[in-house]
Image (cartoon, rainbow, N blue to C red; front, side):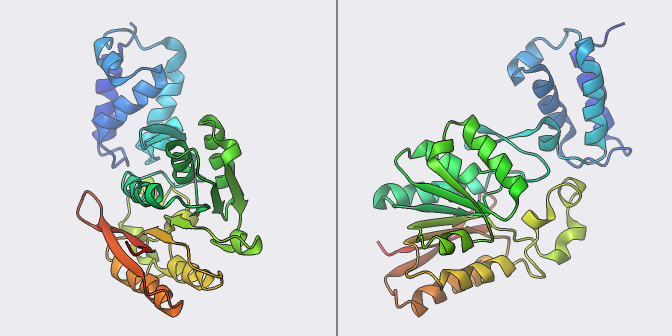
Length: 295
């Protein structure tokens, strides 16, 4: 007897909630998510038509997905996609899975940029390319560039740019932090970055989905999580001038030290007409540190 989609949903969500599963993501939500992706349906159609039989040609794929999810693999890597700023982006184990708090950093960049009209925008450590691609789609006149140390990550970013029709508007560079711009004698007007900031000591506290599957080079920022910020600050000193706007995502408890770094950069450059502010995420955590031309 054929299994209905409802039966597949109930069995899968129960299995993912069981002690046998290493998944820590919500079992009901994950099961919905995977079924919608498997069938190419939205959530409304899933529940409207879930008395329909699960297609036989999808059964083996479904069982394989469940085994991977039960082993702790992130659902985003299983289905190969994550939404950001209302748009779908390809993700795989070469890139960090986009987080919703990064949307607030993009919002801050858009708000400043629409008032000041930056000439060159740079995203440092672009990963899947969500930040420059989103900025390109929201502001078609902006000149955008992005870097990553990982060639595999840049492949994903370029594929996402092609998917969203902005390949010709973003320059992708392989290199360490700001080095590609320094080598080309380019000075960004707006610099944005979500660098690795998880302290190495926190690895044991992380879920299997994160610790065992997301790329370590995109997660960990040295013993205290601040290594990349220090290195970026040193590279910023090599520019003939600071970018007019710098926005950095940070980990919990890191905003104060990163704000001090940026303020120190402005003071050492003699740019006193600068202001540093901190943006909280929806959980009330100080998540983004902004240095900008004073308004």
